[in-house]
Length: 290
Image (cartoon, rainbow, N blue to C red):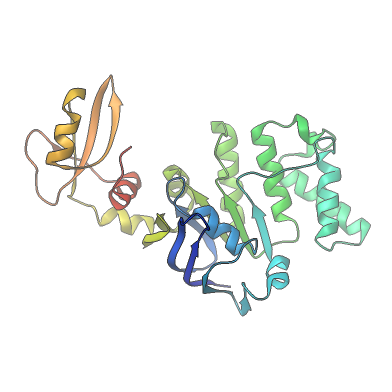
């Protein structure tokens, strides 16, 4: 199955253009949608999840028109938004059972088997009798992915899924998403470069509603070979270097900025070449600063 997005645009009432002629083709597997906060990622995710309308554009999932056949899309959709609410006093097992019923699983015995299997798969079995209000951030995310997977979706959308997770929960989530992505379309929307580096075979960079790059992460990184240079500089010289060079990112090392600059030629002045990574791709494309 293939998801095709063509010419999608959306401008809000306050004049913010959240999507600007977005076109993407997404096949089965893990697909990373990378961009800073406010780039338009969540607007795109909500549109694909049939929760809001674009101003213009067309989206198909296989033979289904996503914008016109919303009920058909929802039968194939799993969605984990960035923020989601739950009934706080309900247990994880009872809530999953209720959501499975809403997804059309009317046979009680079959529904019970599916819910128990999902609790096991998402490492929630020992927590199944606990109220959701007592869950940590990582537990809530595991519950979120469990509800999204009910009904064996063919399109799974996860919006900023690892924000706030500790390293162990993050790795567990990576493994689960990688397993799921072998057979279905999984769109991972995030501003965390590491998520895309570790999980996705294809990606897009979106900024200010525009697609700045789409393709394989390794292709994007290879395209920067020989163009990224770094140097540790005095903090008070930062503005001077920003005027003289195309500084794409900086981070403090022992109190002094380590800057990366983009230059097809050796900039001299003590800069040394570095092997580019996806973070360099990200910052060079959006033209921002770390």
